[in-house]
Image 1 (cartoon, rainbow, N blue to C red):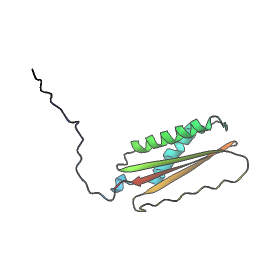
Image 2 (cartoon, rainbow, N blue to C red):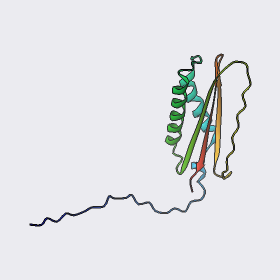
Image 3 (cartoon, rainbow, N blue to C red):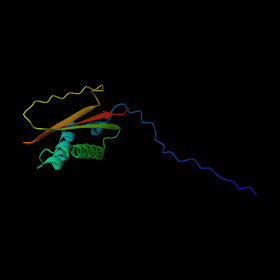
Image 4 (cartoon, helix red, strand yellow):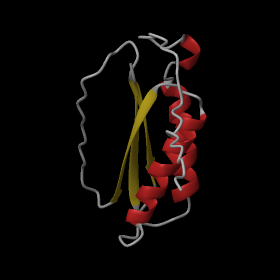
Length: 132
């Protein structure tokens, strides 16, 4: 007695090649809109709070995840996002930050916002890189 076993391959989603090397104007990363999103997310998370070294790791993760989720919800097709969050204690000392990227200035861009109160500062930068 032999039983035939029919193997089925997992179905893969098929996409047609679009050959787009530039996003449409409507789908281009808009730094002004992204800055507003960053501002809202940071304000929701940090408004009314004082610096707490034990809570900072959680705040940083929440700000980064919420910012990235809202960017994805904006419908920027074929963009990859990198969100960088830095929170530090206000002690009257200076802080310098910088970044360098190798990207296409026609399609890729970034936005940043700064939050400060009497006890802490927060700098958030969101980078949108078009995926060819």
